[in-house]
Amino acid sequence: MIELEGVPELIDPVMVAAFEGWNDAGDAASTAVAHLEREWKGEVFAALDAEDYYDFQVNRPTVWMDAGVRKITWPTTRLSVVRVGGDKPRDLVLVRGIEPSMRWRSFCNELLGFAHELGVELVVILGALLGDTPHTRPVPISGTTSDPDLARRMDLEETKYEGPTGIVGVLQEACTHAGVPAVSLWAAVPHYVSQPPNPKATLALLNRLEDLIDVRIPLGELPEDARAWQVGVDQLAAEDSEVAEYVQTLEEARDTAELPEASGEAIAREFERYLRRRDGGTPPTPGGHATADGGEIPPFLRDNPSSRPRPPKPGTDDEDSSEE
Image 1 (cartoon, rainbow, N blue to C red):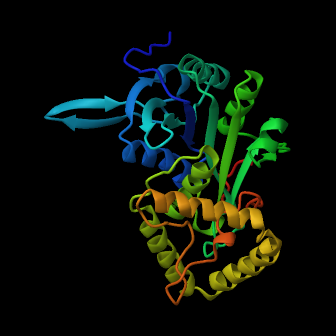
Image 2 (tube, rainbow, N blue to C red):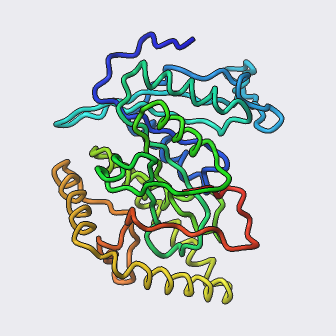
């Protein structure tokens, strides 16, 4: 039974979802949705029954104290709603939880039930995978969909992936079969620095989401966190000559592959983002990193959605990797 008491009529709602686990390298995707909840003060209106979908020996509940009273938090998936103001206000339905242990089809059907009841017009699922990408370059973001018409309209790739999949892939296909437009945005996280958090990947996902649904997302301290993260990884890499040499190899391969991507379309997209932030009263906060002279990476090299992350390097831990 779906209970939606207290949820107002929504304006052009978009559902944005992310799940911890296999689809969430560096916790980049789940942190992005948590950021939206925090910045827009999302109000939780529903939670799925944990008994239906989770193995508590895999995802254990936690005990905590509340004013001297012991309480238990069960692993689950929660839904909240936020209203984005501006000239064209719209609502976001945020879905954040853990990849379920069982009954994935029922899990997806329950989320689609909420989407139907709330009049959701588009589902955007965020994910992150491990890839052969250098931490010193903009985070590659792949936007994929199973709908060829949607791919053309929104400048996305029509997914051709074959292989093991996670809840992101299953939910996207469930949306397609239900006639609900659905998009997946994937961030590629360097496999040699996969431990969370990864604010640079989170920032790149939010920038791409901002472009996709045409809203201005408050970034808070994320740009500074991303710069600090990169400085920290730079220092660690500098301490190991083999790692430094490997990163340089990845940089050369990435720069060669992306040289043709400095297209007019990419430049226009970045300029539109700059105008949105200027009109909103705050300076642009790009997803790139500062150079030695204090400047920024050229806009047309940042977060190109057509960049496709490659699979993790053989022999590395690919526990958090997934499909595009």
